[in-house]
Amino acid sequence: MHAYDLIVVGAGPAGMTAAAVVSGFGGRVLVLDESTRPGGRLPGQAHPGLAGSLRPKWSSGAKRAGELFRVASSAGARFLQGVSVWGLFPGWFFGTTPADPSLSGNDGCGWFKARAALIATGAAQNALALPGWTLPGVITAGAAQNLITVHGVRPGRSAVVIGVDPLAITTALVMSACGVEVRGVLLPPDILAGRVFSAESVIRSLAQGAGRMPQAGLKPLARLLASGAPLLARLFPAQGISVYDCRWMINRRALTISAEGSRKVVRFVGVDRGGRSLTGSEGALEADTVVTSAGLYPLVELCSVAGCALTRIDRLGGWVPLHNARMETTVAGLFVAGSGTGIEGAAVAEAQGRVAGLSIARFLSLAPGSGIDDALKRAEDDVLRNRARCFPFLAEIAEGRAQMETAWSLPQPPKVEAGPSVVSDGCR
Amino acid sequence: MRSNRKVAAVSSDLRLEKHPFEGPGARGGRWVRIRVDGEPVEAREGESLAAAMLAAGRIELRFDEATGTRRGMYCGIGHCYECRVTVDGVPDVRSCLVQVREGMDVSTSPDQGRR
Image 1: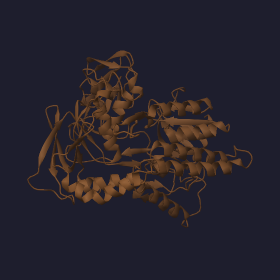
Image 2: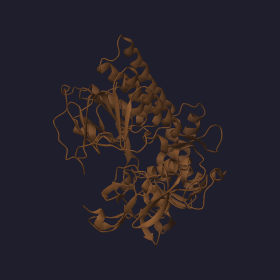
Image 3: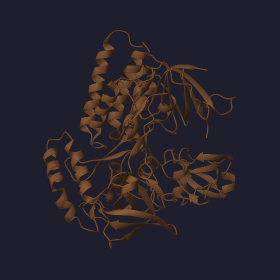
Image 4: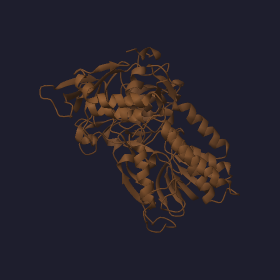
């Protein structure tokens, strides 16, 4: 078995950046990734920037993904695409399926060994399990965006969006820019989404997010928006408003999805300021496809089987591995970076990847001299800088990160040298 | 409000011929032919199998093992396992994670999809 200094799981912005850093120090690095192409969710991302105009200025993650891949691979990192990691065992041994496509003569499971492990598996979408959610043609916002930006295929000619988080909003705009008729963006069912949504809560969340942005003009605007939220919500027309060809119905809550022939029908009910259903305000929207979004959750399965302590911080998106600012976990030699540590954008993931890479180089004694600590400090500051300049996916992300710092500083059981010998059930 | 729809040029089907953003999907690979349940389906190199099937109007990909109801792609990134099909005799291949290849033989039938 070929041994590496570092194996990275996940070829997203965090994993690729860390791979580049460690390879740059002369480390032998292997990146394992489930997708056919490197980049993680970055190539699927298109962001509407509002640079001095109300018209979205689209920027694509594909270019950045290509750059990060070129830097890492030219530094010497090896990428294996289309390989799923199903187990991580002390040592570190990585169980994969299929095996290394370049080898032959085993049962379909591959084994790889490394001195250090970086889990950069990112996040996945929470299911929005309202009645009818398993019908073919009902997809997540991430799937819709990925279909359009990575595969060049629209999910339908028309769509109804259920959900009002930043991913749902971006996806509605992406679809409309690509000629998908977005017939309605509806509030998600309250219980399933974990909180009660209303026009007022949506306007408040937008204001909260905008208030975190560094641009000088945004803070007073955000304050105005927040204080005007009750009035704006009351004035919001029942049939919604049309912005960028999307019908924003943030005072209607989706109830059920059904199929009528090849069309999907979404039934909804109007809600008042407090999110309570208004009797007599029921209605239905019809479209080719229904796009749902209830936020993202960090993918922590591999951290869990490796014996990392996990902690639940809802402000970070749910269960996350306990880690410090240097991206060390409670298990020696096992590091984390990216949205798997808390839901944030690609710029933060990349900055975290740099921190993790430097941390790992130090752990592996690849970096001679004392410059590494200064470099680490600068990289940690860079994470904070990137966090401050991005519209937050989770409004209270900074508080969530502070909660993690506190959790890490609390007395813990001594660091384990390697995780417990958990043998997972393997290939499903 | 101003419209941003004019940015994209949309072909007659669901495939985008021109993209408002420079994603890999903007490239448009050469056409390949795959077979789905015995019928020929045109697909484009670089597309995932799930995307190619969707563009061909085939969103029903398998039968749920417990209820027998139809299922289709849901998460699109390999996590939910809803889009499994049989590819070249191999069952339970996540169609969102494989790219189309010339001559690929795909089956969505329940008996072949089951282990």
